[in-house]
Image (cartoon, rainbow, N blue to C red; front, side, top):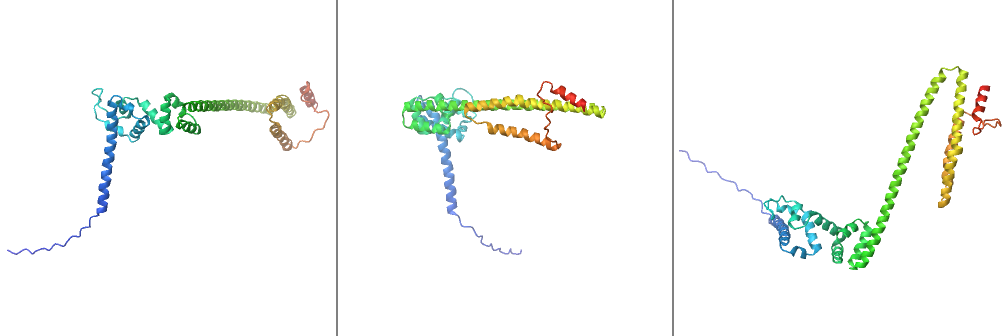
Length: 321
């Protein structure tokens, strides 16, 4: 029987152990375990103190709220999931509301405390608590602008109850007045917008009616003899010119007068504003004159559109031509 040849095994290189990395991993793991234990201990501490008569209320208000804020922010309350409720056979789901109920507090009240702590800070809130300032007042303080709230916080740190109360009344009254003014301005802006929308809607309706009338007139004139068509068109143009002049001399003049008087009462000169409006009208009139190369009419017999017999005279002039 042939002898088996002996095989030689080559040595395998083994990487040196990184002791520093290993130590770092061990330290990290230990820190995570310690952190988890601290968080679990915090939850158990709060629950245990809540079960002891009066112990939870003896806690400093701000310290207690700070701990509860940490529990809520990091969702540590989920640790109660699966435990049996002390009030019955109910199995807890691990919600924030359940956790607050185990502490003997409502979730709304705890959330209010957390909001107050974040808004005012520990020192000011502790001082306000000693002054007897309650939830209703603190809720009003939170609604104040940031600068007013900062002034109130500084006053609270002094511990002077009367100063805080006086300053709070002043700031709340000021804030309320500013709020009412903003509401008034908003309502006025809405009213102006609604009025402008109505004006635009009316103008659109009037423009549509004019277009319809012009289309009817166009069809009617197309069936007339040329001489009759010209007379019809001149009558329509005369009526429009009368309406335009009546609008300028009556409605627009009255509106100008009203604005000038209102400006005089408030000490505001409205002439520049009115001049711009009038300039726009003048530019439109000049544009019409230039578009149709119309000459200046210095005829003393020209029709006065505001005269009582203006339309009759225009009719006679048209028929005379």
